[in-house]
Image (cartoon, rainbow, N blue to C red):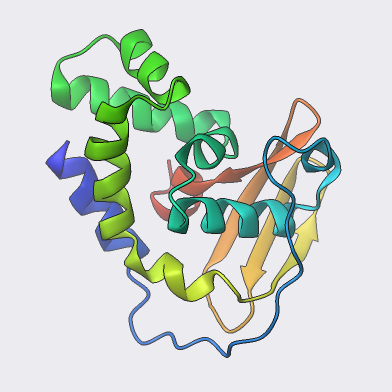
Length: 161
């Protein structure tokens, strides 16, 4: 699991990014019916706020299926566990996942805190893939339309997986 976190930390490094603090449009909670119709930029903002605010059930629910699969596969391989068991731990927001994966992820992704109040805009959207960019931040985030809702493609964005 340590190898996975080092990779994530390396790709998430923001460097000297210093956002201008402006009021961002509120994003709906993942459990809200509005999330199905939420624009990809709002879903991305909600995912960042969920991770920073330790709302890991929401953060997990807002990740793309591909990101979830990549995380589950990596952890299952590193920990010599069955992938279905790892996925079940994430879906239940098990304390072992909170203290193991999410705590390490939050620490490695400290730069996310800088984005909690930064507006994000959609620079392109073809209906299945949207590109989201936080104002003043050069990295473009990928969002995918899955089962009628936008999901954050974290692994696709930062690790190219």
